[in-house]
Length: 416
Image (cartoon, rainbow, N blue to C red; front, side, top):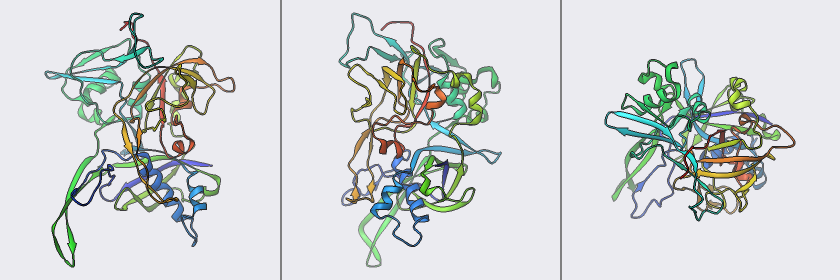
């Protein structure tokens, strides 16, 4: 197998439809705020299939089965630095809490707290909730975080430092102060932009439908798409099976397509042995093994269609189970999950046509576990779980659903 990053740099806006009907009385095509895993998985497999067709059918039933073995984890945002190296940015974790009070920003985290013996829930084995550190109206955090900022957040002891009040009204600067403190004394906008990015802008266009060489009466319609900045690309971590190892030349830009309207993009294949930076192997926070009784935190980097709604199928009625790909037995204590994300798509395999809509847990959702039993076959560290997948279905895992980041957490002292 060969692994590496595949980078898509669109020449134009990226159209990723939200699934609502388009046509007839509905004359507006709306785009999602960020592409979903099937978008990049389809783009990668279509590109590889076209490059390896060698004059034969690119998408016969047999070849489609081979192409479906390509593992595509993403998409995430990649930003070109002045050094000429792309840096990965990840979706914001949903356990971050921010609030604006007058001209200042408060920053903290939702910390799990146990419920008292005199209280109960209808959630089965769930006996805890992640509560915010204040009653102020929450503020949405920046959409994308650098790997360095993400690592700081997921290894930070939020229970011991509940609320930080920054002397600024800028959320990015406030988060930089909270995570980096005195190490980043400038707290300037430039310093904050190194670690945080907003979502791509939504670009609208109005079109005229033609009929017989003339404008059709009532033929106006509108479409929207994502406009990435000049230094931004869509990135995904790709694992090519042995049969397709030589499909894409390394270090060479080739033309490809991404999103709807067959949007043209420059595609770069950058081989690598692991998705996380090599320097992370020196981090004690990521290389200290999980032991029985440790608290494990998983954050979804991509949406995931669990068969039991927001609960993974690999958890039993007691909220216990083994993490996929390991023999690490864990118990779910609580989770932070917001409204589901609908995911559909188009199938080239039989029966061809639109795929049924599925409800997915959104990216950024956080699951808090307690380790019940260690893996008897190998040591499991947080670094080993980064960029793995917790999807129920193996094909969903290869399609990019359920990719996670891993860290630790601490209980809140108070009892709800």
